[in-house]
Image 1 (cartoon, rainbow, N blue to C red):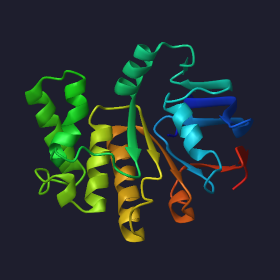
Image 2: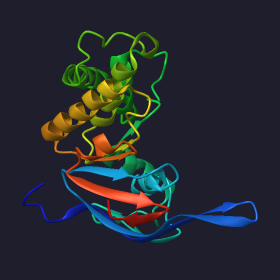
Image 3: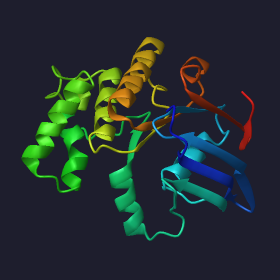
Length: 229
């Protein structure tokens, strides 16, 4: 956002290599970039370019082979697993292309679930979840289970679940990949509005150039390297 100079995320000369049989695959090759606080950031590039790998590193799901990833100025590579779990629960929200909702729970219960994991009192958790369900446009569908919802509605649930804990950073991996074009644009518009309401930084991966064009900061990956758009 204008006037904020300290980046929320700093990626510094990051390499990530995975073993594959008797050889290794370099998924990221010396990537350096910064993501602003409160920004709407897009990682674009074809399949296999390294987008998901980079998101996993930023989300502390994986660690770089070399280089550093800082979130809020903190390098998580040396943290123990329990500290990383606490950091992810308090600071990060995740949105997945396959929604990853719990099928036996209603929409509002799915949104409420991470608050219960954080031991928020049940009455407060339900009130916050209902407010978030209304905020993402699910007021009339909050009692329905994922199997009774459309793809767009399921993604609204996923967005509400990601935001209900008030994270500083929301990571979305191809969040519109399983949606039709019109619904996908609606979901991206919703993310923009929720960013404006909450101040969270959104980092989204996509191969859709139309969605990429809606970003305030855009980075293009190809063969594990950062390239010009």
